[in-house]
Length: 217
Ligand code: B1M
Image (tube, rainbow, N blue to C red; front, side):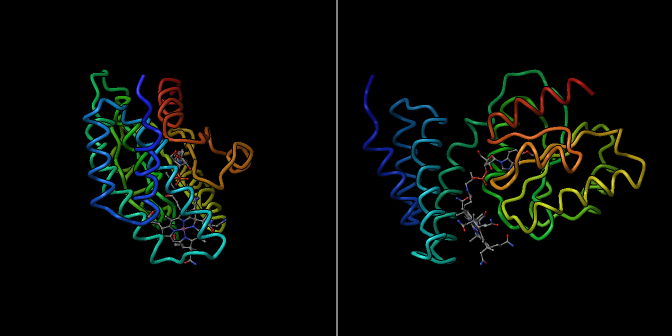
């Protein structure tokens, strides 16, 4: 089997530099050579984004550089999207997905959406900065929804997941729908504490867990 580690490294560097054209071109090239979208994502794109996160934390780079890297990541993800969402699977059910109030991070959420669509789940994506009212409104509009998935990347916004669950409880709807949470600072323990039904550490296991919870409901 061919060794693509050098190309993955180049792709990771393209993300770190924030070069969208280079990231797109390298992604397309690797796909053409038969590399799987999952490997491109994990070994190239996410590797680059992790390094960006570490540099940002260490104050070696600042928000503009992180934004440019995020844009390069999204451009490459656009190339992978049709492949990650391609599904021959029978529809499993419908979910609502969003990043919680005060939080603008959406790369992880978008990956969760793509992987879930690829697993045959219909996703109503509410975007970022979603408060309890927005989730409630979407639930009332789509009564056949089985689950609400919430993403948070900040320790200051993860608590807003509980606000959403509490709002549904107040409206007498908590038992009608399942809640699943995820995002870098979120843990299984935290999910239990706020009364969520499930947690997953990454997009692939999120899609699996969604299916499991939908089938239980
Ligand atoms: Co921000 N940021 N950021 N940022 N940013 C982090 C999260 C941070 C860890 C960086 C750091 O300090 N090392 C830090 C948070 C610290 C903390 O709270 N503990 C941070 C900070 C502080 C901030 C600001 C406050 C900075 C400032 O203004 N001073 C600010 C907040 C803005 C806001 O939201 N209100 C901010 C802004 C930004 C940008 C806008 C510049 C940009 C976001 C662009 C965008 O998303 N469109 C950005 C980015 C890119 C990052 C890092 C570098 C990368 C995040 C990312 O996309 N990772 C991040 C550092 C890091 O995480 N290493 C950082 C890749 C993505 C695929 O992973 O989102 O974890 P992730 O998703 C994973 C899993 O978590 C899981 O599956 C995904 C795929 O495997 N998952 C789920 C996600 N959601 C799920 C839901 C599920 C299940 C699984 O079920 C429903």
